[in-house]
Amino acid sequence: MGADDYRHKFAEFLATQTMGGDLTYEQIVRAQSREELGISSLNMIIVLLNYIKEYANGTVTVRPEWVPQLNDVDGIVSVLREIDASAVVPARS
Amino acid sequence: MISDHEDIGIGSFACAFGDVECKPDNIPDFEALWETVSFGTDFAEMGCTTYRKMSGPVEEYVVDAVRRTLRDAGASAADIDHIVFATSDPTLARLPSDFAGRVLLAVGLDDCVPHVVSFQRCCSSLTALRHGHELFSDPEVTHVVVVAVDFVPHDRDRVLSYAVFGDAAVSCLLTRDDPGLVRLVSCAVKVDPDGLRGRDSFISRKNVADRTLAAVLRAGDRQLGQIAKVFAANLHKPLTLFNGTSVGLLPDTLHFVETLAAYGHCGNADWMINLIDYHERFGIRSGDTYLAQSLAPGFYACGLFEGSAR
Image 1 (cartoon, each protein chain N blue to C red):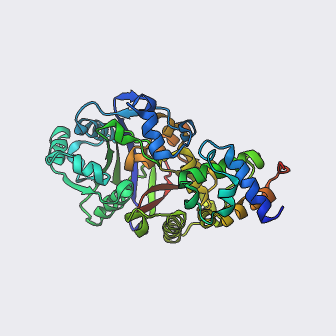
Image 2: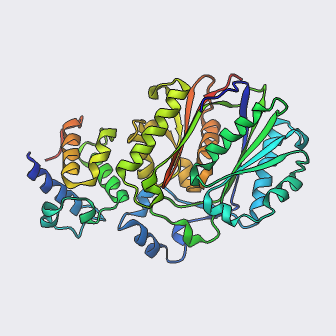
């Protein structure tokens, strides 16, 4: 999957989360920063941990080098790709 | 800081939690309060089921903890040379001006010098421990009590975006020529200026955490992989897990889940509560390396300990 596909996947996943239900795919495609989307630090951490649970069956641990990437949408999308690539179990499509 | 006093044992930890058990969702207007600070996050995921509230004057809980520490150590009040109180900044402002005197008189600490360490928010107790340790540079000092205390008078002030606050006083005893339960290997506290300005970020928080952890490991001549268990701060569960893993600590080394569920975040006393809880459940092992971790907006503190030979 390319970066655009991952933005789409991020948008779809956010829509399943209690704090992200109001965000549209268009908003996420346009956004540069997490702040623009109104996602707090706590929310971002929960989204990340829930994504790991959902797509990596909890087999991936947060890596220190991912942390600075969580402030902008490109960085977040890049982290999601790495989670999928690191998953011991096959990632759900 | 690296420990110059390898003959100082730290032990006889004692907790005096608030006497009233409460549930966060029973706080008036809890749902609206939580929505304001959490932006739609499910509170059930935060890991705090109950917290404890002090119904009486704070010094009663401090006196109870100190008495139990002395009893456990078989020490008398006359043995204690210094007592170091540690508290977060808001609690410092709430303490009565004669707080130290009341505690000294109630315990019978007639030849004991009181100190206070604060202004480092929830990181104050690790600096207090370090200060207590440094008091042993006076060869006449044999016993120092360190007490961490934090409480919140109004329940609505307990619910924050990073934690639910509970009330507790926890004490321990530093003794010369006694192995205690652990000994202090190294200790460090560092500042995140962005956090002091209320503009902390993933990057600034990770930066101060990395610097602090590197400092204690370097001073203690240890590697990250040698840490057997981490006595973490009881922030919301996802935050605590994230904060640990973001500096390379493995999730299964963090000890906090049960105490977070029962007591919430007891300010600067968390690492001591988690050390006690871990020791009661599994036992501190001689020679193993343990990390105490505290953090607050603007600060990060670490203490490295070694289990004592008993």
